[in-house]
Every structure is written in C-alpha cells, then in structure tokens.
Length: 546
Image 1 (spheres, rainbow, N blue to C red):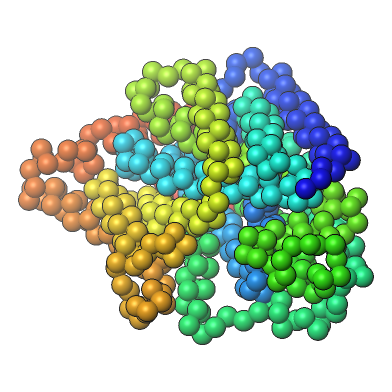
Image 2 (tube, one colour):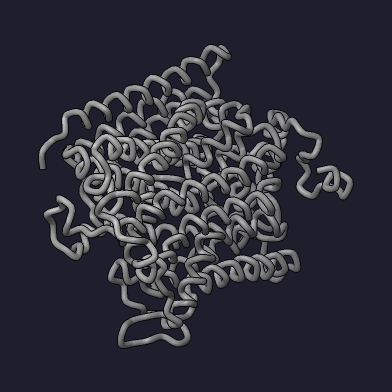
C-alpha cells in the first residue's frame, strides 16, 4: 500500500501538538508546589473542575475500539451493536447513583482502597490481577484499532503506528500524570467530536450511497429469540461490570466533591452517547454504499478480517482524502485519550495497592512515584507488543471484562455495602467465580463448556442461560455466605482463634491496617462540599443535606 505523505505529515503535526500540550501540563503542575506527591500525579491534587472532568471522562470512554467496534457492529448485526456504548454509559450513571459517595470516603486514592481496608493487603494484590488484565487488553485493543486505521488511510506500517502512538502517550503521562491526561483529553475531545461529525455529511452524501431507507432492513438488524437471554446477560455485564474500572474512578476521585463527581459522571455518560452517533452513522453508511462503484479492490462481500476495518474503509473510499484525514485525527485522538488513562490507571493501582504495601509503609513519596513510572513503562511496552502480535485481542478483552464482572464487581459491592464481609468470604468468592466462569466456556477463545447451565445446547456448545450473571451472583452469594459462617464460627468459639490465619474475623492485622490508614487518609482528604461525609455510616441529616 502506498504511503500518503500529506496524511503522514498531518498525523505527525497532530502528535506533536498532543505531546507539547501534555508536557506543558506536566510543567505547569510542577510549578504549583515544591514537593511532588503521588496523589497529585494520580488524582491531580483532587482539583479537577467539572468541565475538565466531563471532557476527560467522555474522552476516556470514547476510545478507538468503540468507534471501530460500533461501525463494524452496525454493519454486521445492526443496531444491536449499540449495546456496548449504551451499556458503559448506563454503567457510569449507576456508579454515580449508588457507588460514588461510598467509594470517595476515607480519602480513597484508587478503586482497590475499599477492598484493601476490608480484605487486607494480600487479598487486594490478587484482586489487582483481573483489573490489570482488563486494562492491559483494553489498551492493546485501542492501540491495535489505531494501527489498522493508519495502515488503511495513510499506508503507514501497522507496527510503526502502534509503537509511535504508545511512545507519545507514555512520555507525557509519565511525568504529568492526571494533569497531562486531563488537559490532553480536552484537546482530544475536540478532535473526536468535531472530527467525527465533519466526516458524516461527506460520507452520507457520497455518490456511492444508496438510500438508507432501502437498506434499513440490513442496518436495523434483528435479535433472534434464542439470543435474547444472551443479549440481556451481556448488557448486565456491561452496565454492572463497567463499574469496577479504575479509569472511571480516577475521574470521580480527582474532582473536588461528591456533588461535582456525580455531575461529571452524568454529563460524561451523556457525552459518550452523543459521540456514539457518528460511528453509528458510519456503519449505516457502510451498509448502504455500493462498494463495487468505489476504488476498493478487495474481496466483496468483505472478508472477515476486512469487516473489522469498516470505519477506516469508509473514510478511505467514501470520503474525500482531506476529510478522511480529519476522521483519522478523531480516531487517533480517541485512542490516545483512552490509552493514557489506562496506563495511569493500572500504574496507580500497582503503586498504591501492591508496591506500597509490599514495602511495609517504608516507601517514600518519591519511591512510590518512580514505582508507578517503572510499571507504566513496562505496561506500555507489553500492551504495544500485544497490539502488534496478537490478532485475538478482542476475544481476550471480552474474557477480561467477564472476569471483572464475575470477580471484581461482587467484591467491590460487598466491601462497600456489607459491613460483615471478611477475607475468607473474599477468597471463596474469588476462587469460585474464577473456576465456574472458566468452566462455563468461551466460544471466542475456543473454550468448550464443561459446566453446563440450564437449556445448554450440546450440538452448538451454546449456553442460552445468562451464565455470566449467574457466575457473578454465585460469587457474590459465596462472599456473603462464607463471611457470615466464618464470623459466627470464630466468634462463637466453634473454630479456635489460631484458625483465623488472616486475622480477618477476631481482629488483628487487617483491622489495624484499615484503622491506621483510614485515620491518615481522613486527615489528608480535602472534601470541599458540605454533603461529603467521612463516616462509614453517615447520619440521616448528612444524607439529606447532600
């Protein structure tokens, strides 16, 4: 494929602008104070305003894989493809309604902090693993989508596009933290919104287009009756499984108050839905284009590998070249706005919830910051390699998302809403959830079902039962049940004290750690609105005032 020089020049200019803005934000942050603190890098000093928060949250959810995925999904299966963006938007609303106030209590820095206070440091290290895998495959998927787009539109080698994009994101995120991420997200949000909308009129008025009404049966699509339960299952996975993601909570924790956090999340959810409309229209355009009349020389109908390129193919062959570059800038901005957030997300959880506890409280602020930077660099390298080498990233990201839904969501929900849960329930729920999810099979990974849920179809290895939600509920019930049984058994003397090896029931290490860290966090937390309470169970008057 020939290299489009002017397209390459446009991309280079765009990357330079993003890089300069990110470095400027980092330097601006350093001038504000003499001492560099981990909380300033991870949460921007909890000083992000509502407008900046809305932009950075929207830009994070609207990633390259979402743009490409919606366009591809509409082309192949119709409006059912809106399930993912609408599900994640609804997830943000649910998180704002029920979770944000509780998770901001006690000076929380990462999503894993409430789990660490409830279940201890060792268990939190294991809970970090599904969160890490989800972030890693999400980041690799977004970088891969950018690589394919640059290859189609500009003719740039796939690995070069991915490597350069990852390097630019890594450098400004390393030194600027959430400040750099937030400020670059504003610029990227402008590119995403304007870039995508500018391409739509050119695509939909192309001479290659047929009437949308004539092709409506294809782009509307249908959901077969046997797939309804699966559709509901995946929707619940997106809505509830979208809650335990650090990229979401990093924004909610970085703003000044609970009230601002809720406004930011509601507006961010709405912004994500608005940004879903252009890729929806691109998918509808792809269905309605007479591809034989275009300059596309590939196989028709599209081969399976080419279907994944629907969005860049529409930009390349249906829109004028200058317009396709604008659309490419939007996709590039979407990828970078998500990649920087994901890198910061995982590195913050590692530094605060893995490295810091491993150092037994001896790690200085400077040491924690450098641990975060080293881990961020390693993750950037790994996700870049995955994006270049692995073709089944989408399948892996689906399984990782499943594990977050099945394992992390019940753990976080129990830790925030049920006071009596303990580490033994956490361990049991973690192990059971992981085992039954793997045994339930995953067609995208070629894993046949060993555990057969009701209505299982052996001939097609199809599970009509909403087994993902079933696994999640069994995990949650196990956490509650085992916690209750162990609480009763230890406190009634049915089990000797020496059997409480993790000191999770009769008092000891976990309680001391939680009390000490909560007191420290309460002193340092700077909640700005009257409605915020640092008590675990705020009184009625405080609740009403919020």
